[in-house]
Image (cartoon, rainbow, N blue to C red):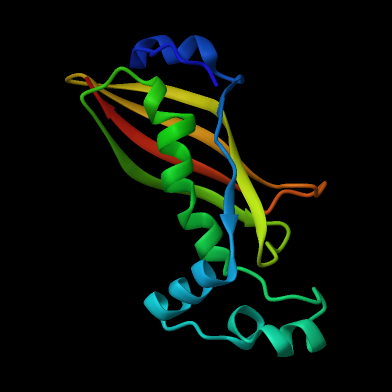
Length: 154
């Protein structure tokens, strides 16, 4: 991972470039169960290990798509926000999210971040658009690709 800190204005020169890759995060069954508890989404394909192993097309329980999406937060702190010289970085939203492959319980995921756009909003604020590709260790297809927005305040 790049350890230099970029000023928001300097990120414009990095449009189209990968700026960071997070460490791997294990998406184990306890994490999936906790997410199910927090969201009241207890579909068997996520939480019933025996049934998912027996009946699901994935032959194992899988993480909720929104759990995988939620993991962008900690992965982005490491792979993106730690590299930005700003007083505050806040989530501004999502432009597009596509869930491409399921994350089976026990698999590890990581995030690759590419700068898509940087827009000066005035008053020391910059709108950063990034493309986030959440890879699944050992698999060709990513779990998801999401275009995210962050407001950088310097």
